[in-house]
Picture 1 (cartoon, rainbow, N blue to C red):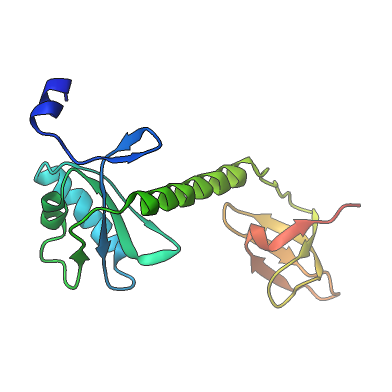
Picture 2 (picture 1 turned 45 degrees about the horizontal axis):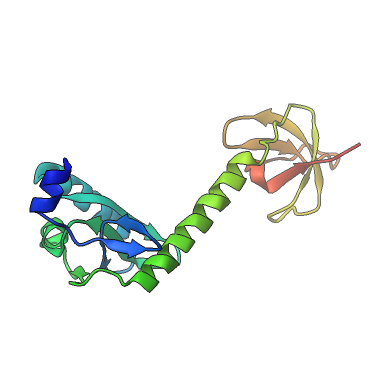
Length: 174
């Protein structure tokens, strides 16, 4: 979009500390339906060519969907006929915008930390300690490794093989 087009159709913007962004509208949905409405918003934005730039849900408020769009009418069209969904006409205030940005920055920071966390590679024959579940604090030997599971022998005399997730064990340093 060129600058001339922006002047002809000025969109409301949220201005915080000199930064400008599109207004963010809140849509209240029934519990457990946020993902459904995100898909609906995405599809209708594509099909109807609506000026919707993003939509997201925060873990802190699972029944609220935040929609970044040019205007309320676009949001209303995107959620039309979705049972019990209600969009608030006015965009969020600058204070709410600031708090939302802080929450998003915190989430991004946490996700970067998780990515940076070194993935522990497990090998057959390695001794591990179980840190969660019914066999917590027991040591076991890895018998088999797959992408999402480890098969462990509890080494208790008789062969007892259990299945655990990789995040439920830690390597034993020798």
